[in-house]
Image 1 (cartoon, rainbow, N blue to C red):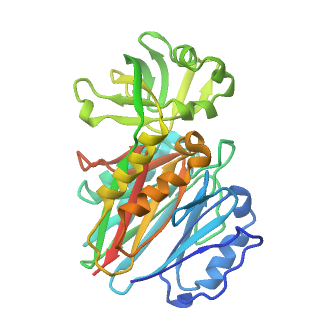
Image 2 (cartoon, rainbow, N blue to C red; image 1 turned 135 degrees about the vertical axis):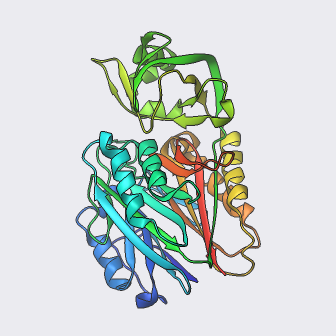
Image 3 (spheres, rainbow, N blue to C red; image 1 turned 30 degrees about the vertical axis):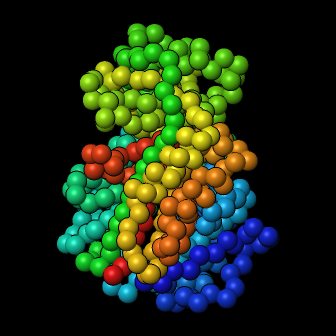
Length: 379
């Protein structure tokens, strides 16, 4: 396996020079600023540069290239596999209620002998990420790791773009399956956020929409914690996610971030399911703990690939980026440090949701406010 990564637009227009993979590349990932991706120039350039490759990518809340983070660029990572077969599939999604059914369809399209892993990219606003990942898992079985993330749009929450084999557009979900005995996957996901405030019960919800907490309007309760920051919803909610868990099963806790609010209904829409009866508690972040969490995710995903080329795809949450601010590179540096001595090629993006197996339970699911990492290599 050979790997080539590029930062395409940091210093101007899209341009790829001195490529050594070219028509040998089988798979190309790209992650970029939404405005840079609109119009299709980035996709067309990549497809022309790597004519025999599956080219897939999405818009972001920031781009990761090695241990650096950018806001107005496009990064790409091309892979030439020697022994691994690939299969890809895609679907349009118009409403989050369709997420589970679309997941089942995508999973069914990829299900096959020696399927070792799936990487998925989805529209970040019109999807229920937990239902999507559950649907894919139902289609392929619980033993196949599902990894990837929801596209971003900075802190604007206006429009996200996803594409595979065509110009990236809204309302798209794409996935790639990896097959064979020689591909090896690692994965890790960790947050570093701290809980505060009392434990509360989700008393009225439907899928990923929460109407009541402790029998009171959900948005009112949330605003009481945000104070003046409530005026900046939904973007300010990225700084105060919820951790939720089923009754007496705190080890199964996941984090949820708000995508939108409805003032009339006093409800909040999250990136993934928030079931009735679950316990919820507010969270807030401290920079040293977030950086430590990124290193933990890297340690979980680390594989003994020796001197072989290996890939580390980082999908971190836009909320982490907003909180870390000018210290954002500390979390990517923490990841790179964990891979010291190994030949990992590191790239990725800041997202509206991260998909990865739960490190404790092994079940693939949606996470929020985490650094999530997928590693792979061939032997």
